Length: 111
Ligand SMILES: [Zn+2]
Image (cartoon, rainbow, N blue to C red; front, side, top):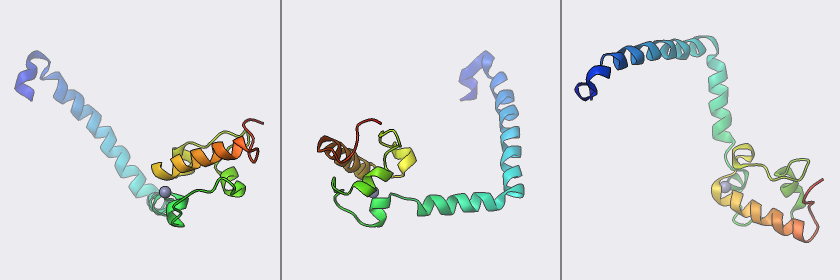
């Protein structure tokens, strides 16, 4: 790796060393200061998987307006997967169900 770089070789290790040092320092600080925070976050992320997977739902009902409303913003937009926490398969089902519910007038397209 390094011999191929040639002239720019010496500058790279310096840069890496300079970059690694602060990162390591930053990593140590949260562990020492907010260790509980990290633990809480990991627990939450494990628990907050897809809500439909938790309930073992195989099909999202378009007539279940209360559930679908929770997955929409107040303006009627569908929450992204990152926000809703759904898995890809269930997010696709939700997308379809919300669009069906909109079509028959159970949900609004916009507010
Ligand atoms: Zn799921």
